[in-house]
Image 1 (cartoon, rainbow, N blue to C red):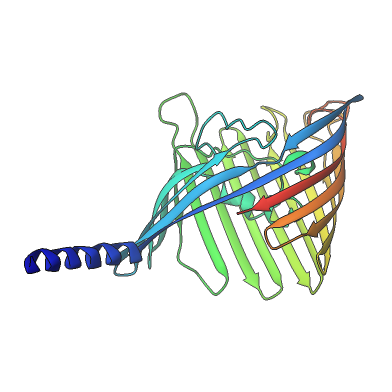
Image 2: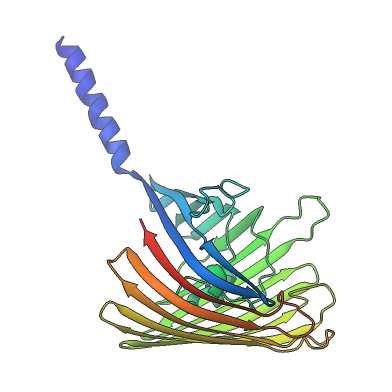
Length: 312
């Protein structure tokens, strides 16, 4: 009996030690808007999903300063309850990290995008009908290997990635991202190449107390279509945060593609967010896309929306 009790106690302590060295977190976001939309003169009332998701991420301490990690993320629609076509299509990766940096393998969003366009999209995380309609995202998320260097200097990071073609007639996709924070000033740059499409962008964001100002400029070749040529796009964003209230304004302008006549376009958004708690906010916005006659971005569009976003 005593031997049995000792074995049971040792087993319990061993299991507790193993659990203490690893962790798994469940997280997610539910984000939905009621909108009155006008798409090329066709007016509709819709309940729209804004990139809602549920995810699982975890780490295991391997000792010697090395950790293994994973992240699985699935998209779904709040308005219908339907899951995305690929269950873990938003993200599915395993990684190894330590003093050497981090090695990532799987399916995940380009860090070049996070370092530029997403970084300054403050009012609704670049989701839904008010998301940036003009930024050229040319990278491929799947079949990806990425390496993130250890911190090069205080506040500086660099990551490079390649997506394999895997013999399916697809070209390799490359992306590179750089981030640097200097106090209130936060800088970033991103580069992507996928076949004959490529883009590079630079971003800056500056915090002045309650006021936050951001901007990026992007140059792309064939970002919205083969043989479109090149164009330059910029976007400005501003936020004023006071108490539970956030006031947002965004303006973007895409120049004409060199081989596509009448392809210049612009977009602006005015938004107001009210934080009901640290995790929940109600918000409203008006967004408008002025497309050129070439209809590169799907035509003229505007929407007035009211939404609720809850993070868990």
